[in-house]
Image (cartoon, rainbow, N blue to C red; front, side, top):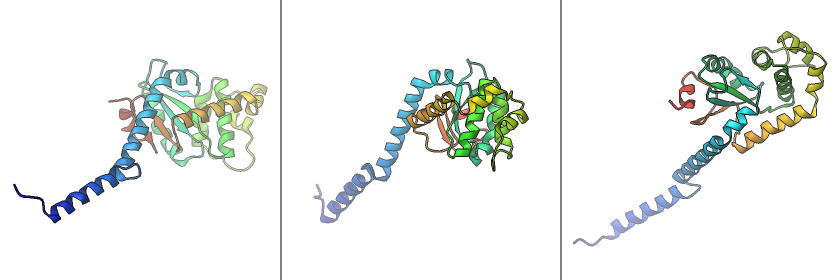
Length: 214
């Protein structure tokens, strides 16, 4: 039996060192494993919470209660959220899924828009306000008149809507949305989370298949 030479030993040591570097937490393999583990933990948490989370939110597009829920973490000024709007509407219109919006405003103006959407939800008109905010520009600059914007979106804009915009209940709702984004480790908009997958970035027609576990 041939005894290992210095060169063989040196190669073996190199391989061991490379493996240690790759698999340590900051290494390539170790880092990817950590990401994979984190993703699985988020999906496990989602599966535990999603039914209750979906039931608690009225910012829903399409589908009945029996349709699988896809959560969209969204910001009304996010260009990729606006780019995804038509595709997401198609998912909802298909009846195969309901899209549950979680508001993650990244600026003061986005927060104003999210409040308007939440208050439209209270009037049973969330889809109309959501569509208006995603497809129009008039609210994005200057002093926005949210009651006029509500009227343009065909949303009842009486005293209750005006009070809702600055109410403690609306602020609390935004805080709850921020809390679920934090728990599910959402750091970018749009992010889509379902029982089967998690997709970050602009929505494509194929994404719904993955999100529905097909």
